[in-house]
Image (cartoon, rainbow, N blue to C red; front, side, top):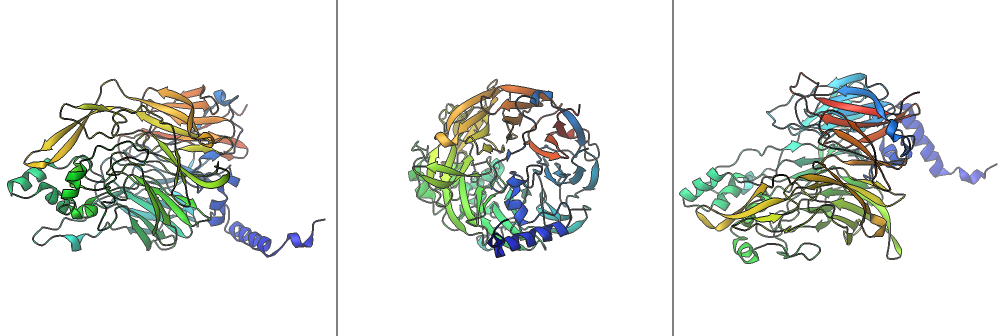
Length: 591
């Protein structure tokens, strides 16, 4: 018989909270469930599998011995037109998935039968539609849409609970006298929201721009104006952000902008983190800093991923992308804070706590969701964070301080990485797409292995003068025929980030990985192959042709004792013809 002291006030509170959640019925997700998501391997409660983004499943029914027997268990036709990059969630036997048009479906996770569907109506035309997932919490399904809205749906019925449009940065007070104010800056929500702490956190993207409208520059030169100033004035408001909304009402709680207001020049840092010289004309940048001083208000730096959460420290971790304009770098003098790095921000207030910048002055985005884990380092246990970027490097940081603990081995070849180009053209790698793109990472805490998809696609960079503006130069890029492939790499984060194994794929890898306790890593290719690798060796154990490109990350769940692995594929032809975009769930045969 246990001691009476074993059931104290803390235990009573936990039982009371569990009872309240149970009273809400199956499918109810609260903060306690999200914090303990790893204890529910039968479900997949948030984009990263847990609030720390490890994408590791404790399910082991499917293992390295029997994975070759996997077969499709069911197929759901999604639609509409667009690129299929979505990530499903599963809560107590119900699967929730978005499609490219920001529609949401609730599906029986065992059969693929549609339970309800929300058809999103765009408030403005959107090109290249895509959506990367939903969030489920507090009896609602949250979706952030291509037309700058966040919608909360009733989890049981799909009916709209609230629908809010999130405004971009208002730059009207910055417009110089005599200059026509630009209209509101259009942007997109593409990443899944993060639901936690009574908030819905969303990341605003598609502010980035590399090529600059040549006609705008030419017109400015013809008027005798500085084309850089003209571009900045025409793009005031091109400023990305992370915002937290109240989960009950949709009211905005806080907002953090990814470009530092007023002075984003920083220290004019001459090297990347590892000491590699950056190809920067620092003298020219300093001379132009005052002239292009409003560049921060047009500087983009889109946050490329859903944040991860350090519950104990009340921190959100966000990765940021390139500043704008990408290819005429002297129009944005300085280090361009807070681009191309990792930011820790307060969950309560949205205030910046620390920032690490991999690539000052913007060459390579930080692109992946940050992965949280504990690391034995120099005799102590460090709360760590791992993240990868288009440079092809991954970084492990102390998540309390932002200190870099180490830089891993590169997952793709590197050559003339930071060059702006030459008049004759120079080969550079990784190219503009990566490195590591927006593919989801997965981390096995039992081995310390981080599984990373890579893009090996070098390019030729040329530096050409901007007509009529002798102080400005533009970097142009062109692909190299026949030189485009991908990688899947296992890095040992418990041993300094060395490469354990690597496989090369026919095409760049752009979806993401999943690792399970069965010793299997799953990853899909753009040629339609869905692959299973031995997590320890990289040996290909199984492959299935789904019939369409896979640019989405896989996930796994269990219903009534049967484990499933699901992945989205393809793109549909029209909004009314669903046939091209599929969600496929695999399982072992029932015999």
